[in-house]
Amino acid sequence: MRHFNVAHQGETLLIKNVSERTLKLISVTVKYGVTVATLDGQGIRNIGDEMRLDKDLSSGESIKIPLKLPDPTLVILVFRDGEIFRREDISI
Image: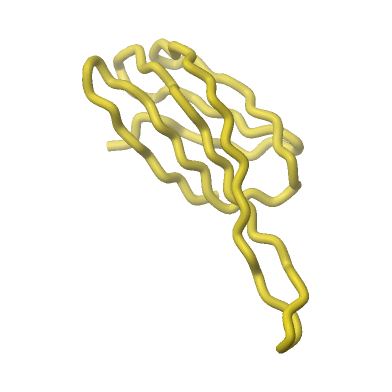
């Protein structure tokens, strides 16, 4: 069961709490695949951008996160559900 839904909206990500409980979103890491020049030609390298939030999101509430690059590939959410810390990886 997913706790969050992530939608790519232009220059931002919309992260929505789809669980029935209030969750504390601790950090968001956005991974990007960028093309780099290598000795063999071109390759893809994954880079990431982490943001600390410590924000409570009630059920159905959402938050917008600005993007540094236009094409994110993965979002890693670290959050607290009551006394339990959880991690959710969402491919975009």
